Length: 325
Image 1 (cartoon, helix red, strand yellow):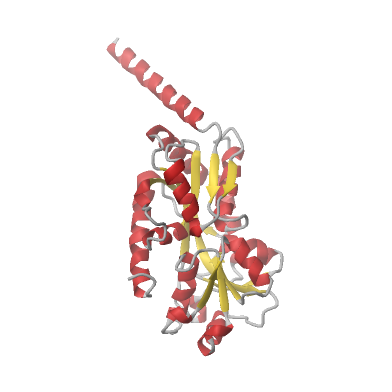
Image 2: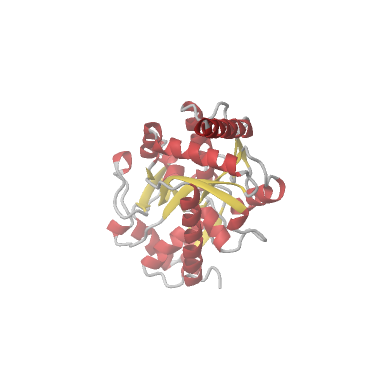
């Protein structure tokens, strides 16, 4: 009899948790902290669609683009105005960790939100317009070496952000001693940065392969280097790595989500489970392959620990290249 009561209570509690989580996520929403077309926008829209396709959410996820401050506007909105919203998740990446590491979100820290899960890693790329005379990464870096004022590099993160750091890491690896001479122009998202490249306002683009893919497919840009240890598989195999061109630069941008700091444990666990189930699906493996995402299987506490380590590592890199003291 005692066992029966215990089992009944457990079942009731499980149903209560399930019902609570379902109610909390009746109107799922994802904030993309940049304008449409960039990596954060891709993360929200692709994950939202995949969650619904797999039946992990019942309704279409609303995607809200909230650009500004390299993600700082969205971070402040979540911390200050939506801290207990159980229906909300926010796209994040190495760019988010970079800004937090550098204190670029004034008054905010990574501990003010809850880190949910990763959905893959997106290797960095350096690209130029399709009609550019530059064909290789060393050719671009030699041009910068000869006259730093002649080349402007556009990216979707703020000055000192992850897109900026990637091109500085490549420049440093190539022997450009004063990496601060590299001209970097920040835009609110990779899509806007590529638009400026196509308009001729800048000469190169630094971003992630998921941001660049559509523009490569349309014939607008050419990737002159992928910042990966070896060539990526499948349709990305034609893109040369920086390393094979003699530039020992690697830059992997993780992609994932955070949630409001006051999100309930029940809702948090439910979101972690949903994203974990998505990541494990064959459908998501196909999305990863199609968009150049490398595996990164981290959820819940493991992801929280990973982000903490990323922030610490980026602080060290930023100090080494003079971004912060």
